[in-house]
Image (cartoon, rainbow, N blue to C red; front, side, top):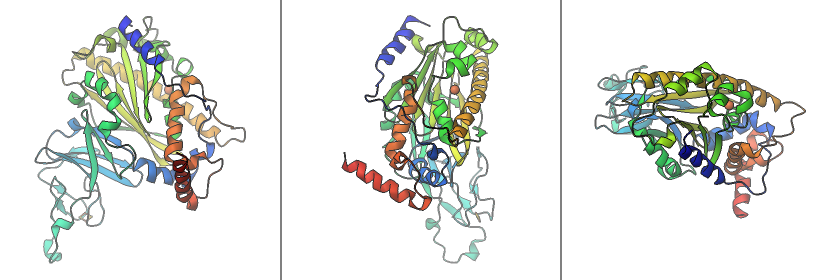
Amino acid sequence: MTNTASQDVKDRDQAIDRVKDWDRRGLPGWAYHDEGFLALEMEQLFKTHWQVIGHVSDVPKPGDFITFDIGPERAMVMRGDDGVCRAFHNLCRHRGSRVVAQQAGHCTNAIVCPFHGWVYNFDGSLRGPARPDSYPGMDKSKFGLAPIELEIWMGFMFVRFAPGPQGSVKEYLQPYEAEFALHQTESLVPTGVPQFSEIDVNWKSVRDVDNEGYHVPIAHPALQDLYGFNYKDYAYGPGLSVAKGVFAPDSGRRWSVKNYTRITEPLAGLPAERHHLWSYFGLFPNNVFFLGPEAAYFYQEFPVGVNRSVVRTSVYRYPTENRRQRLARYLMARIDRVTFEEDRQLSIWSNESMKSSAFEDFHLSDLEMSVRRHHDQMRKVLPVVRLGTPPAASEMAERNAALRQELNADG
Ligand code: FES
Ligand SMILES: [Fe+2]
């Protein structure tokens, strides 16, 4: 670790916004197992908050697309003949089929629905239905693909299904901008299509485990080898949680860590204090970006059921990547794979405990600041989660709205 890097971490550490009147409790156990609450989360959290869908380099040419499903929604981003990226519901206006089936791909000339063959232009407008003579007098302008809000920030593409409290991505993620610029994220290119892993727990149990480094020394031998105790959480603002690990000077007891730290070679132009740094940038409620010396990735967990989640990950490299950096990226992925499996088990134990008669609550350490901040944000957006017992599913939205009004009235 360089002196500058260690100073950087120290300064940031001192800047941690320690919450006064520290409430060490987490969300109530019921919020991890309640179907009615999951429905509320889907409507008022996942649909109204920005989700990263990919990078502009995932769709470099007109006709290229990438897709993204969450709950009942399915989105796609398509690059048009004019070079502009647009987001649409991946839903045919005839009878609702997906108009593109793969995670990512390319359409030649037009988007042709695989059900009956309606044809759409890359800008989403309907070119024509199949057998147009069977639709006399049809106004084609009324049957384009339904648009979704899309914003591009530092090379990454974000979609939002409904307006929400986060403002624009640029405003919301402004505290991250300088660091993303140092990592030249606009120049990243994909290493493949997004990858998926399933975990049999509520999505918040995945997030709770991922949101703190308190467990690293015990649960992640490889990460502990890499960072030692140089792993810290930082508060950049509501909904923004950051963790940074500076490689320990004596790391390398494990094979993958030893080889990774031996061959790591930073992107040209990256400042020295970031050469031995892995950093993680969270975007509430469920997105995380990783920036390393020679690669970057994002991951996000989604509920597919109250006790089942999918983690979607997409890894990017730099166009200038050389053989050594490629090998470093491989070793980085190897360390991450082991870490992910260790976290999987922890999230299962945490999640199942919430059904036990002995489960009281979390008792969060100062080192679990980001878990606390995530829960604070949940309590703010979905105040019904402050209740000790869950309202009936049929009353969930109404109780939530009433509580939100009360809180707003209290200022
Ligand atoms: S559902 Fe798309 S053409 Fe029929
Ligand atoms: Fe972990």
